[in-house]
Image (cartoon, rainbow, N blue to C red; front, side, top):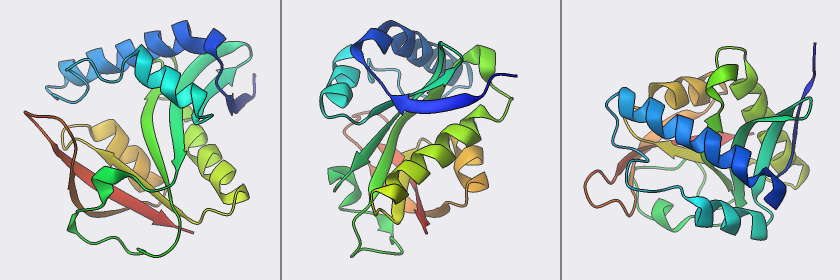
Length: 172
């Protein structure tokens, strides 16, 4: 059995990342979710992640099977929350654009990807992690709850029709 690894993404990974994100967009649409249905995330978003060295791919052998962005620093949309963050003083990292290839769902790879990203952040001294998702995105909610994240409230993103996102936090 191949061992999955989480590694920094490169521009050579862009086609595979975009294919995975397209699959995730289709799955969200099929589930009735408006999340990621307005063109975001797009290739420019991922290129920005890569330029900032925040993009990570999950590889199984040589195949890119997952993607996420690990962003260390303040997230502007997290400044206002209907609810409360447990820790407002410590630096935090935000997990964005978490997606797994359709072909590899249900194998525990999402949990592996998330826990490894948290380990990467912890190795950088980060002890506080945040993530948000739309209320109809049950796979991500299940994933983050299984990883020990707690629901902290609602934040609002720059999405004109459906800006509400459930906000979660993990404190190590």
